[in-house]
Image 1 (cartoon, one colour):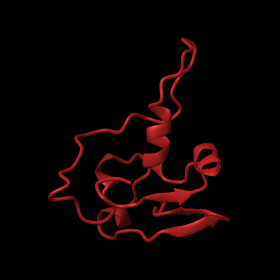
Image 2 (tube, helix red, strand yellow):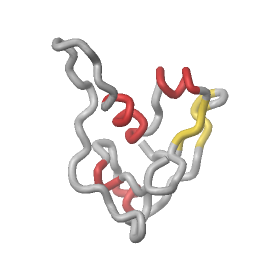
Image 3 (cartoon, rainbow, N blue to C red):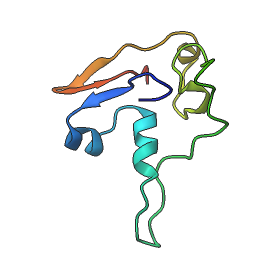
Image 4 (cartoon, helix red, strand yellow):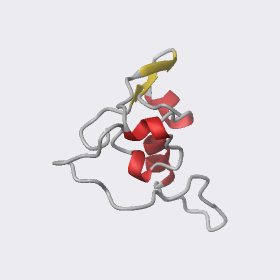
Length: 92
């Protein structure tokens, strides 16, 4: 969930292994790993977190998303089934 909108639903193991939404991937990348050689594979989101009282139009994560497309700032994506038991609200 990001700013009050569900962005991904699925079985825990599937979502952790194959995150389908950039925000989910960002959250998983934020988990500390006790390995000094580990390097992040996802970029840290840019910008400030939008206001939950006045969220941006379209996908609420688009201002900070590395995979955002022009449609993301206009339309809010629906949850779409990407695998059995796994739904994602993302145009990318």
